[in-house]
Image 1 (cartoon, one colour):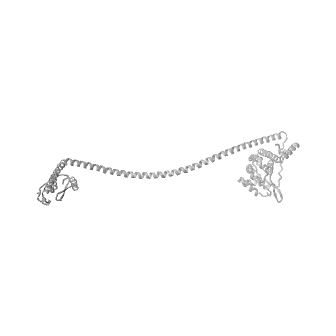
Image 2 (image 1 turned 30 degrees about the vertical axis):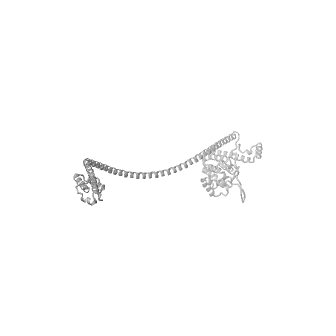
Image 3 (image 1 turned 180 degrees about the horizontal axis):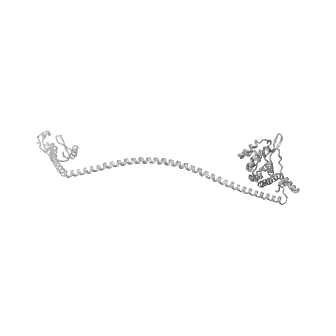
Length: 430
């Protein structure tokens, strides 16, 4: 991992040639490694010298000039050539123009570069862009955003270019240390188009223990970077796994949310149905209560009428009992008198039949029979007269009931001469 391994010795050169013959990509990989080591040394030397200097850097500061030359070589590595009228041209201004699409803050730098007078070539614009980005202390951020979009860089770089491989990411990480440097450039009178970007290796070549310690520092730093890269890869894997788990959990939560929404909708529908049913039941209860009140009022009226009927019945039973008590003996005596009179009537009928057999005609028999007070024709009159005399003082309602019974119940008496009479069955008049 020594710097500029291509220029080591003859033996090393033969070994490198053999590897190149076996693997065509070895040369590009070796160039990437050398450029990365140069960038490390340049950045480290610039930071140390700037901190020791303790002031704002300008364009005349040699370590700063060498840093821009190294960055220019890194950006030009593996750059595709574009055909123009004057031939093929390689310029790193095209990739730098993409930064403003990825980071909006870079649009100000791009506009300032385009407005600078005296810049006629894309190379000059690219150099001015690097200086302005360093002044803004955003160079590391812009380079990282650009390297992360390899799909856009593939239009400008070969697949094995430094910007397309891991070395580009390492360099963008090293650029973070330059944020502690304050730089100020005046580019109006500076000729950036015609400058020749040549790396001065004399600043980095050291003899004896110093070179060896520098090499060890570089190796240690590289090991640290490799360890950091491995940790980042492990962290990315864990992060991807965590993201997958979170996505699965999110899907499950969304499903639960959908289920809860469906359950909420169902419960809302059931609640509305329950409210409607409750309203109907309340209305039914109101109607039932109203009917219950009406029935209670009707029951009270019926109970009142029943009590009145019971009182009337008791009064009637008491009146009947008193009537039977007062007129029971009279009714029996009258019934006996009626039976006696009936027997007399039967006796008189028999006598009349005998007389009729002895006499020629019924009319003469009737005329010759003397009328007496016990004649059947006079029985109703006698009974009525007798009962009227005996039943004085009987209540009017009892008289009315007995008279109605007599008006509907009569006995029919037929005589031999064809005459008939109707006598009351009870023989009671009032």
